[in-house]
Image: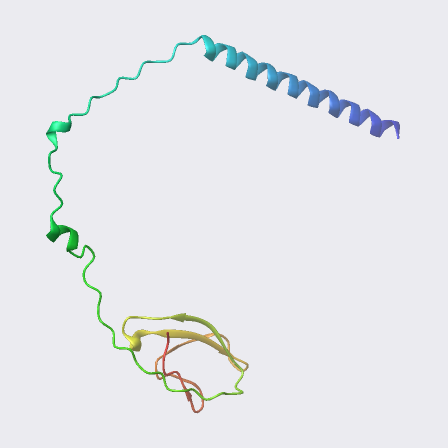
Length: 131
């Protein structure tokens, strides 16, 4: 018991010494910088006459900076059948061209596998679309 109290006393001494040294250093730094003159910053004058191009050109403002958006035809989705298959969708990698899209699917019998459009997941089940 006496040994535990001794350790606490030593720890408190070190903590108070650290606090005293930190506060002294902070105060000394504050006093030093209060007497040190700040360097003068030179302000660079702005010449407003150099730029009189305040006109916004309509052609530039209406142009497409990043190209034009491709028009995509909206497909009517066919209703899907409900299934009792034990499949789990882990992730998708859609692409602009649907044929390059992929899906990560796992089933009870297989680990996670990557499937492309029209790949057979299990017998009689094909991957048709990835969104």
